[in-house]
Image (cartoon, rainbow, N blue to C red; front, side, top):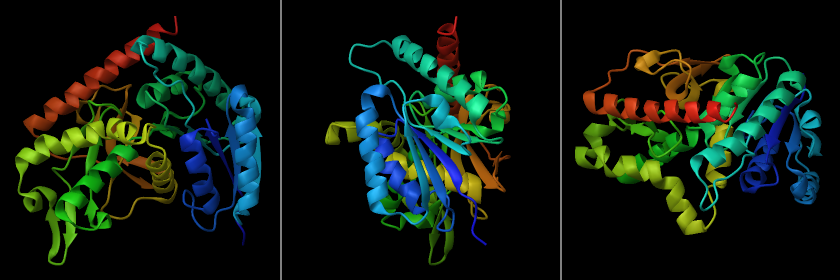
Length: 332
């Protein structure tokens, strides 16, 4: 029996990430090859013409799973009835801007969009915040959409997770699909901690720890971490534009695993509302290792944290605590 279409909202849909993301959703990359979708695309009025161009291209691509397209600059129309919201739109940091200025702009954007989702989205709508500062934008959204369960508001650190998998795969010259269980802890910023202490590689003689195979602790505790932390900046330097294709792909991965479940024995990184696990302050949106089943995520418990890792976990938590205070000061 044919499934009912799922309504998926993409904000900032005329931008680079949005342009890469919407065809992936329409092709079934996010929700599966048998799941029809109706795309809701939102952007700001100056981008209305470009947004209409994206809609025309979606029609022209004749995606069999795409059962409708809403392209609008009105947040209420965009949010009405949506089951999944991918929040790509935000105010980017421009040269000479202080962090507080960027935070203030994003607080007002996320406050408005949160109230539209709060009033008009479908019950149990799942939200993924992509726009930076992603963790804190997600926290603001949670604040102004109190009826959306806190478990349903997440932010994207899967891009960092995938970057870490890619670096290990290149270092060991193995298929990226054979590497699993890296962890991104904390903030989607340069304080994030890419952790391979529990990661493994599937080899012809069984699963082996990444550390054992790399045989270079100095690389794993310095260069590897900084490559993953700074990868976004390296791509901007090379492309003169920020990551779009990889961000769109990892947003699909995040939602797909959340909705359809993670493979047995595999965890992924998601920015979720902290419950105090691993001594991370409760009330932050913080990236943890999670497993997903039946549309619910669960933080992986009981992993050993060495002294080096503990310092990294605390450092990124401190930055998130500061960001939270900064964002809340913009509310007053």
